[in-house]
Image 1 (tube, rainbow, N blue to C red):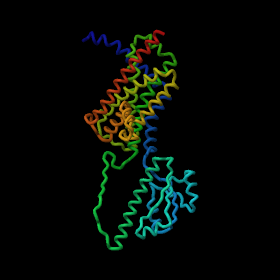
Image 2 (cartoon, rainbow, N blue to C red):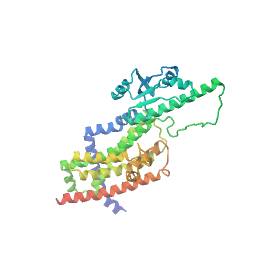
Image 3 (spheres, one colour):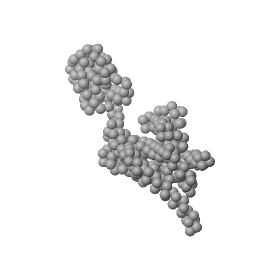
Image 4 (cartoon, one colour):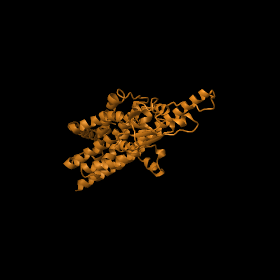
Length: 390
């Protein structure tokens, strides 16, 4: 036993020395430290505040050709915080002008016979022209107006039935919507937590790849080759500091932004979250080393990371559920570690799920992480051997 410990001591000292060197390099790079702090605090705050998916204060212009009490009553429902009436148009030609110049996001057109149809027995109609350049707000605003129209129709019918004394309650659907995990439908919880998980991905890739590419550019990687350290020890020394830094910044984000600012509830086990996050960061740093081995300089490394990160984010299921993707895209998304990590992160933090419920996501991260680690390690050793021969 003592012989084994004695034999293992040199490699542990070498790895510890290399890890201290990596921490020292990160600490001396002040711009990098500022960028890392910004990424896990200010960037997450801005995503939570500015990344809301609700349509708020939608600039609305009204072209009321009816000018009756019914049209005024309908328009009175277009109130803040969802709608902001910016103009009452007088001519039809103004509609295009307001939409083209972006002064109004939607234009509500009320036809001349609106009052007569509401008072009579025929169905009244309105027209809504929406600026489709911003597809998401246009879709949400259209849904809001559809809900307002439905509520207004029910009000008119009940008023008419009450006047005639023929108010009869027939069979109806009593809809009672109950939202779990996020009862107030706060998009800031989703946006801020999503930004944190994305930052874990981006920083894991960027930090490791940038560090190794910088050493290649400066020629310091050759000094490591003549040292007693083995390739696997150099490999571990590159990964472990990134894992520690990302986990520390992740905890800082919870303490300074997510919980105190957005009131994000932590319903699951933080120990489980940080344990699996460490495994995920371990996998992503392995990918970062593979990128650094391909890139000849920093510019190439950044471009390769963008090419990899963009499809990973789009296929992660954060903005578009995997079930809504085409079958071949859904198949490709299965090899993206980010898809499993997002499901895991939301499952632990917001839903309070345990390891047994999230076993599929944890297994996905572990399997893909093992493949990335093994592939990157073999490539790293091969690259060092080629450099040594050269």
